[in-house]
Length: 281
Image (cartoon, rainbow, N blue to C red; front, top):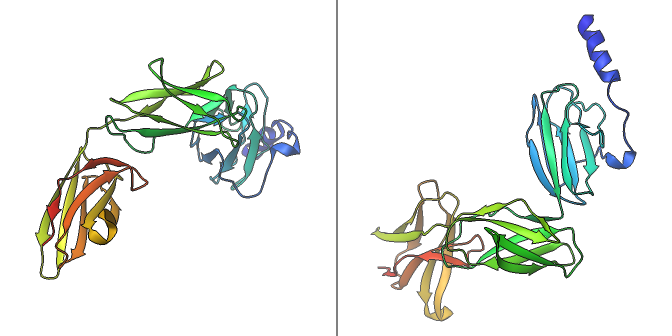
């Protein structure tokens, strides 16, 4: 009985539900999201762009709520699979907690400009595209900086997106700067990687084993053949490395052409490193 009264008291103490525009009880979209588990906000810190809507989704059996320290936003009591949305328009830091479990805390950083996380390492001396978003007018200029020095500039598009090409020599942290405001830093890892390849001849097939060093799981590796009908090197197969940096390609015997293996960006076209050419038997 005592537990029931305590739970009822906690429920009644929750703040009143804010404007309905802040709530969406439909399916969670593709925007910024914070899953809620049994005793934690799964993403305790989240950086978003001004104008973004953040969705909290209760994925646990326990009830939770979301309450800003400054009371600028507050959810109702969220049962299992319940959701709460709030749009952040003003840059700043917003801390919040679960009123039912006060040790559960999180914060949202709202910015005018954001850089996307680098999805894969770069190679030294090779161009690398850094992408981001800005809550700025179309045509605005964004400065891409590393260690306080400008490395490139980008122009904001109609949808707020921008892209800038940098040519890194070593691992560094980059920020996007516009109107005196800087994005959170994003580290771009630069690796001087190498690709080696070997050939094993079978009765009907050839097995090409390639190794990327230093090893990096999920790197894109492309097998190219030098084909007359394509007037030069042509990609025929692509795959991803495992944790050991090793990949294997199998091709039919009979094509006596030159082959090589490339490490590329995710687009399977931007070359980062290549093996020596070898001849298929």
